[in-house]
Length: 588
Image 1: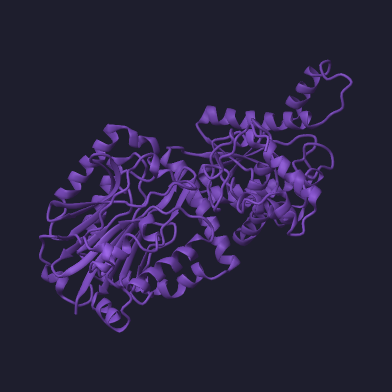
Image 2: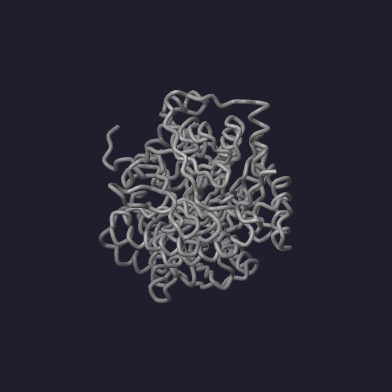
């Protein structure tokens, strides 16, 4: 039997905190080395992903290289694979292969993504080598994230060169529905090449990006051997039988030698497998046995939940992504508490629920700022929500301040009817109150605007858009209702789900005075934003041309607002952040 024991360290590093990341990596090495002979860490684990323009600073690269030297000192009779930026003749996104207190080799990422939130070609040069490592008769290869997404290179070269196991280290961001596609791709790669694939993904939040973990070990037959937790750090320990590769390739040989792959690079790791690793008996320690049992349970029960088209599962993963993104943004940036305006509507109720789940009720402050237009129902819903969540509530009326504005503008606005000017004044008063609380107490203001509103500009610049982090910036209104309903469990008052949405900035106001029904609006927005469709293409799907024309014009006119909006969590393929790069001055 040719078995190998491997540990995938699904960690949550912090960008720039090289000392903290090193400490975490060394902790996991010490923990995993008792039971595994290959220990793996994610892409750019030493620096965190994505360091962006920190990569231009030599001191940053030097510190990462010094951290690697510290790791090398702590690697003895086992192998460690860890991601970091490496400077040679140019800068590379790399994976260091370490064994026996020596740096054996450095693999450079070949396919550098340059779409969506990725901008790797700005920083890195692509690699051009596809080595395979021999470890006492075991042949494995390493590549990085996008490298395995390509259907041939470099994985096919590595498998053709004798690799029985391909280890892919990743920092692959989450969006809803992506995991199903990724799983199918990885399962296909393993089956087509007749290899084991160990796919290790980072976990945690970094600004607007969230990494969902859910690392995988897949057999040559395409079956899941092990599955990491979703949106949590995890140590995934597994023992894999490499004889399965031989059996699979003999029965179903799929790989053929290609003439252009003649330059095979085999790098020998000068390390003999220790008897404790060669022994094919079950993993020794009780806690490791429990971990193995947990892996088997998860792979059988939870994998279906991740992969099937199930609304409840989709709602859960979106909620977890939002919770993870907010928690890490707050904690990694050193905020003790957050505050948000509570209106009694669905958006602020949902964001309050996310914040409570992410941070605990003691760290969330709701601020109720009623005016002459605030309904009794909204007041009741705010107080019921606060009671259900157990968070602190501050009530500050804006009516007196609003009246001062009206009095001061009386002569300037004389003879003119009230319009959105007076509505926006109220919103900006509320924004000022929230920012005053933030300044005085050091709280982070989290905004409550959704993707539908941000897309069409149904929001007030320096008003409800004022804040440091936009939690549901990438969540359409219809999805807000659906996810909030699915995860509320009675915490959001039922009336919030049934009453007509309203900003309550004038008597009898509802959102649909200005916007199409959200069921219609969100579909138009989806076709335009995610599918790049124009007016004629969207109309072909049965939408009224005048409604489509109005919505597209609103999107275009609101670009200047979006440029000034706070960052927010990406949960869709195309968010209105780094994914969306349109000119403000635009006559198309």
